[in-house]
Image 1 (cartoon, helix red, strand yellow):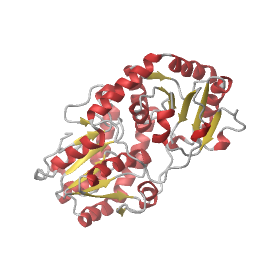
Image 2 (cartoon, one colour):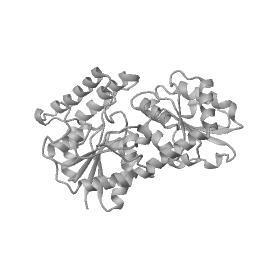
Image 3 (cartoon, one colour):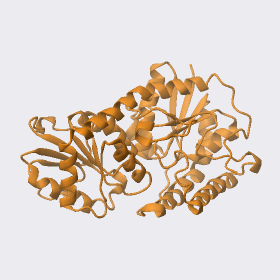
Image 4 (cartoon, helix red, strand yellow):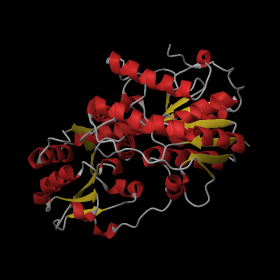
Length: 392
């Protein structure tokens, strides 16, 4: 039996893949635990999960776009949370005694702590923002990001000569995607596809509402876009309003976002996503990697309206794969959205392309492949201090 500790940020899209991975490890007879803010993790993990708490820290909201959003997520969330949680992460590793620490790519405190304590660790990439070097063509931004990583290392009191890129484990990097969606991945990154599993505390849904003689659309722009999503959701509702004879649509949004919707539009604050997707013909999304990959895993094409972070990368991947279209989140009006939605629904080529990506996910292995790679790590000796991917 081996022990695994997941170090995760308080974000559903980053916690959910660890649930499926943990289930595969537990089924194989191993122990798992998590480290992160229990206030956020417990509702997602359930009452029986072992959580080593870091405490909760308030973070400034992130409403920027484009490159400003990259700076924002690092300066307002990733770096402050890493510095805040590092002592608790070190205590968690000492208490859990893991054979392998699985570090979310946006929880660099786990990388620092595992390296300092001499414990083998793996990177889990639940976003495409840090796969390879997408900012390499923007040298100033690229250097700025490297400076932020070095800043965290120095502030943690780590030896300068042992510095390495905290986003990439020298032992194993797992990515929740495949080349069929993301394109070229560095050879030392193992793309396992989406890691799916039943989730704790899923809400009820009126499946009897779904009319089997109509097509079905799911609209979701993610919980982190609540501050900017109302206009887009209402434009999408206006786009779908005249199509009641053809389709039904489920909006993941507070009901008051869509005042007095027609009967073929339904707004729910939460839905059982994985149970609902097999009934869908199209997903309209902001392009978060979880939503994109969960949709494609079920062979469902997309209309993607990216907002920030890795979402433009994921939208471009969907278009390149032929599995959907990209529209402008801030600019698309009801007419443009209706045109994109009806085009994807009416073109079987998009659904065929989504099925191709789905097949690539199945071949990559998901949770089983990721678990096997982690178990193989337990057979190795930890790397000597400083034997990590250099960014110097």
